[in-house]
Length: 164
Image 1 (tube, rainbow, N blue to C red):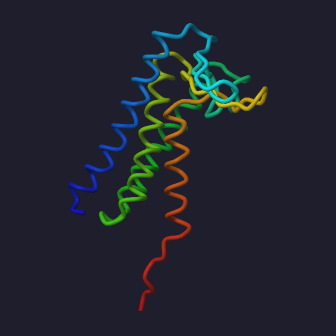
Image 2: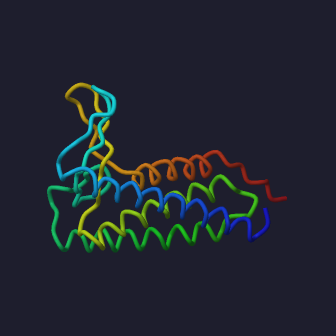
Image 3: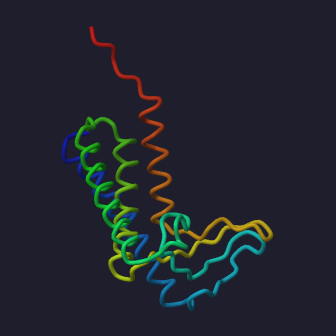
């Protein structure tokens, strides 16, 4: 993959992730009243309208406030800077880690847009079994999780050539 291809992959993956995240949230905002749900698969999956003032999967949601929002925004900007740094160090041949970093970047951008617009993040995916619910999440959270797994797998299992 040439240099344009590397940039195209990163920008394309990040943009698709961001677009899917923001369109899905827009639909939820316009269709489902706050704290209501639509049952999709009984006993397993609902689409909900929830606002998360905390981090991914509701982390620190009970400690919400202006200063915590600033902390989340600062951490997001720092993480996005780290992603750009890691991305720039990758060879154009390494498509998988580029895609993984792009997913994390696009997801972080999606949630950051929500924090800037609303002061919280719109979550809408509700997965559960019986009364046991996983915390509501969104496409951005999913992209971040998958991207981190892809990139971590690359770092853990990638073999660098022996110097000799």
